[in-house]
Length: 334
Figure (cartoon, rainbow, N blue to C red):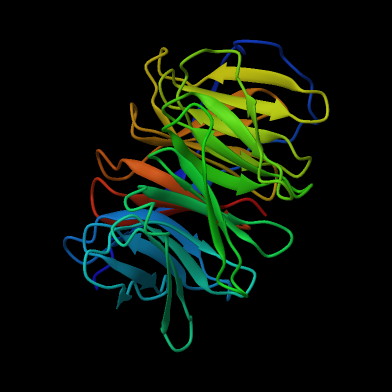
């Protein structure tokens, strides 16, 4: 497919923002400069989530509107689609410890594994008594168990070896959305509808509800840093928040945009820099916890509507659902 490239050297002004709760000292580091590149996808793809492949080269993405898993070659811009079946509407994709893409498919109401070499599908449907759970995001724990969320008000786990699946009712009902695993091995999810961070005990499957300082903030996605702090995007109020499980302290900051931000995705890179997608100003916004400064990178296309971010060293990848493209922001720092 055709590729639209934007080699935009960005050296944007840094905007500082005061924290909404306690402030905290971190080790400082200078922010770098970055360049965008966009990749057009086949018409009607409707990309939702993106995940760099285990080979460190190709990039997987979910084509939610078209019902397939896509594979992008960043060198050529060529894409390849793998059909997931009738009624498929894939939401999330992650790369598992086996190197394969694992998909949360809301249309199939199932977890799907795609063999990266043969493209063979392994489909794990939810139990019949859980017919339409609006599957969202998945993560693997340190034991190789896949956990997943459903916005209807569930979370669950799948043992890939045995195929055994358990589905549980979430505290407070609907809302489980973004999900990730901390360095300590705990699994966390963000509840969009009920505005909390949930910590799952992977042994008992019980959830501890952790409420951020701001009520009704709309916690949407969650990602850990190297120290085990859990960062969340607060959609309803345009903030980024962090929970430290060691101290049980919360901290929050307003994103730049005069309080009108809509923080959808969050991702922490290998330098412990925090990236967010801000729908209000159509940007990828970088937050440096060491200085409490923000750097705003306006997306090359208008109304990109980035719903999820993932990356690898030197690259931050995002799916622009609003314009049917993938976009990468590459570091120019040495």
